[in-house]
Image (cartoon, rainbow, N blue to C red):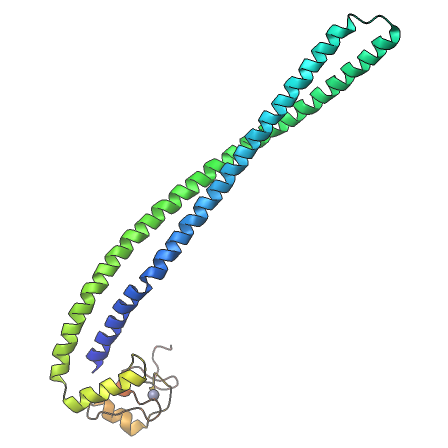
Length: 239
Ligand SMILES: [Zn+2]
């Protein structure tokens, strides 16, 4: 019966591996999407920086054209007042040019920084891609393993069930069903390890000698003896 429970446990693990597969695939897809989004975000910042830079360069070229036009006109002015007005236009254009040059410098500094972040995001994405590919490959292996394990375990279970007396097997099936996948429990330190209820010492002794089939009075699991001293009993490894 213990062996039967072990087979049940292994089969349950295999079933769970198969059942969990879509969720694990989804997690991997989500992780890859997140890394791709981070990369796209940095690339968008870089594109915005370059667009802003082109805009500034355009503005700068326009102001420079104005400036040279004013300088040409300065040669042709007739009166002092016209001269002063033109001089003021020139100063305004020069001021605007310096402003745009400062902005251009800021954009170039930002460009270096954002370029570095794009590179980092590319590396992170590549790393994540490799990790996820490896996990997917492992998952394929685990699935194939689980699939074949289910077949093997079913055969082993059938062979084992044939060796167990029908009433015992029926008992196992019954407890397995309403105790959700666990029909047997070891007695450790004088207690049922599943529900922790105290088992009478005489029963523990009988279990130790493998003389009886005994169900836990509380949780109904089929008990078996496992050689672990209880706390406070003979000195031994404390758990
Ligand atoms: Zn119990």
